[in-house]
Image (tube, rainbow, N blue to C red):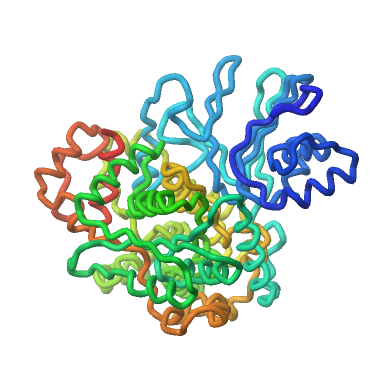
Length: 538
């Protein structure tokens, strides 16, 4: 789309939820619209009016580029949370960009730094990708291209930009969440919700159902495998309570494996997340039932401190900081000897603290491999950078000095894990089924307040997400609210090859892996991340 005079042109992917409000402001300033209800035209004329200042006025998910044909310059941006992707390649006299890497021309050579990052963070950290020469615009980044093609980038928003003092009003959270759901229900097509039966998706579904009719969709696995806990009974109970039209995917091993392979055909980069296949199946079921927009519960754990492991790491961090410095090396060594096997996560945190590092590397820390030297080839390790520089950047460099431990943890996940793993999986899998996913917890107004909530309101070591649970009492039965957090799970032992020869065959020829891998020592999550990479590479 272009302006009427042909000077400005826009390419846009996403949704601007407050476009009607912005349209009224622009009309009052004298702008004339050629469309009746286009958020794309609002974006375009908003840039003409406010320039880069448009970004702070937007509430939505977006990736866009606006070209000024008169000056030969361009401006682009990605939304605050990184819900929508933005990939680009710079060449001599050229600038290519797309929401999919496969659309970019030229060779696709594997970038080994991304492989090393993958086994720490379960995805490649920005601004790089899995391909040499192809970059991603990171969450809340914008850029300008001058007439000579020179690119300048900056971060235009940060979760803690409103400050770090924990003075937010908890009462504001409830009304903001309701308003966020209301905005994301605006659509000229039917809207549904992913419903796991956990607190986050159940609360979003309950609020949405109160505002109108709702279809909910849940996933379950057809197995009685040891350790697998189906959440379908809880999802059914929530649906019955809120009065939604409920639908389920009940998957067997063959269906799941097929969905795994199809999901990795959709992904531009590998994501070692077991939820990709279920999200694809659920999105396909939603589409088959006439639903084209789905609400998800992503972001609640990061904002409302829902990970028990965060509180454990905080406990270790506090203990470490109270120790006299001369005693710290001894404490780290002693803990490893006495409790290393019983509490491997705690042991790794002590060892990192002893090296001057932050103890925990985001919400995925407990799920990833700690000893990369027994897995990755020495040549790869010697030719790539230590992934801790990513942690240092997101937890220390970008965060105000006065931020507390939990604010640093949340900032890290909001800047890395959410955009490049959790949001990437729900966006790619939903779009793969021609469905649009929206995430009400990640309205920036809600994020900025939640980041400053007093810790006593948020919870403690034995009770996480207290504020959210108190809010949910208005919508859900207590047995849903108070049940232990299980998290999404699948019976990994049944869907990945347990026969070592099969796994070796899948990984054959990957020169960045050690030749003497001890597959028998891999836990299920390590097997999954390894196998997922092999599937993607094939």
